Amino acid sequence: MKDENCIFCKIADGKIPTEKIFENDKVVAFRDIDPQAPTHVLVIPREHFASSSQVEDDSIFGDLVGSAVKIAKDLGLDESGYRMVINTGKQGGQSVPHLHLHLLAGRNLGWPPG
Ligand code: 5GP
Ligand code: ZN
Image (cartoon, rainbow, N blue to C red; front, side, top):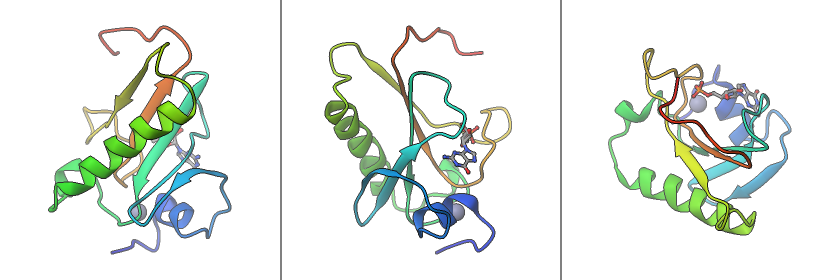
């Protein structure tokens, strides 16, 4: 399913030209427009889910996390480390209503998150 008004659906479909870091039949990955770390990649499903809580087939989470781990390896982040985050809903800090995984790296990331 697609949402005509969704910015990430448009990116996944190539309607908004965006340099892809990785893609396969299930997911697309590209750099965040407002990076919060030296490496900040978004991994999204091609299919539109408004958030993690709207997913019916859990296998998409394996595709998202598995792709992010592969991208991290390809970018040479294994030794220094990285973080994967899925913000969900209002208190989770989600601002774009299309499921996405943040891959963050390149600096010491604080914990707990704000
Ligand atoms: P959220 O706050 O929903 O977890 O994350 C949404 C992310 O999408 C933010 O980090 C924001 O900077 C990023 N973002 C929003 N619009 C665009 C866009 O048009 N292109 C790209 N590359 N990133 C975007
Ligand atoms: Zn969408």
